[in-house]
Amino acid sequence: MGDRPGTGSLAPRVAIAGCGPAGAVLGFLLARAGVPTVVFEKHGDFLRDFRGDTIHPSTLEILDEIGLADRFLQLPHTKVSSITVRSTSGQTLTLSLARVPTKFPYIAFVPQWDFLEFLTHEAARFPTFQLKRESEVVDLVHAGNAVTGVRYVDAAGSHDMTVTLTVGADGRGSKTREAAALPLAESSPPMDVLWFRVPRHPDEARAVAARLGIGRLLVMLDRNEYWQIAFVIPKGAAERVRAAGLDAFRQEVAATAPDLADRVSYVRSWDDVRLLTVRADRLTRWYKPGYLAIGDAAHAMSPIGGVGINVAIHDAVAAANVLWKPLAAGAVSEADLARVQRLRERPVRIIQAFQSAVQTSFIKQVLESTKPATVPLAARALARIPILRDLPPRLIALGINRPHVETPEAVHPLHVD
Image 1 (cartoon, rainbow, N blue to C red):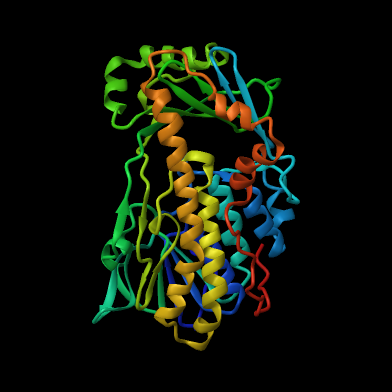
Image 2 (image 1 turned 180 degrees about the horizontal axis):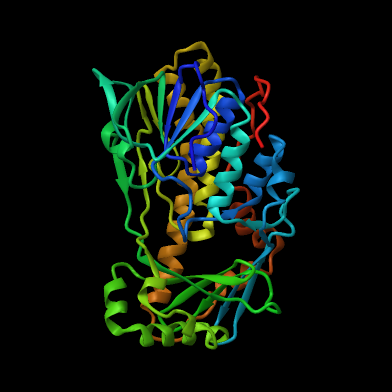
């Protein structure tokens, strides 16, 4: 697929490295506000499997604020309003989003490639937006300590582009973050995840369903025709699992989730299983003159709660709110960039602390146990207290200090079929 309609004779003021959720949302909002923006995507399409695709109520509310929620929900999707944890010993804990104060009391499961195609198509209505596919940002261009643009590679070779601001939205392996040499604080999550899929029976309840076994945990994500499975393993154990053989792996899955025993044969080879090496880190400084990191480039999130996409989108909204006026005026100060970090760092730290607590006090214990896992007594007790019962669903659904869209629609949209 080719590049989207672009900036034409308008010189870009913003270059966004990476067209994941954070880059796509920021590109849309800035272009909508009249700021000439180019977004670089190193691939020709967005078709990568086992990417995060949980669109939480907070993101649906953001889409609603910019008039896109109704059109977005016309895409094929699955709505899930409960999270159920069940142990092989028969204990069950259910968290419901039904009581969360939102217009959208559910998680919408939409393939990330559909979300990104939808959003970039909508952004292409603005003459200030350009998406450059098959164009990878490989370095930053500096003048002294300041970033003055990007170096990118496409089919025609290497090019430099001068812009007012470069935004690193190029994920947890961010090349722009590395080039900016910003300080990074890392933690050590106790787990990795093996992703695969099996068919879903039409009569099975729609839910995000966790299953606890002996030294094992898996999470089932409802994708309508199939379950997307996250099989949690101890950190660094992937090679040991593979060495034990595919039959042993299928047996472990069936033992952890007996309701999947009739379908584990659909995992026919290790090619059907994808490893996610779980990382959690956070830049202690997200910016330098001319550069800002957002999303996974600023803070890689654990998959706990499936909040990563939504936290990244919150970053994008906050960045657009703060920066659109300075960008329109042609100058962004370090104080502007620092303000974005101040708005977003505390919510990120709180969510990462919550994820870390779940990992160390629950998941690590499950993975190290030689006995059948149980739903923690404290969690079962808290589930009986309404004000405490609804805190985790609310955190997952809405995040912390979810920003509202403050950018205007400053240009008349083009018609894009």
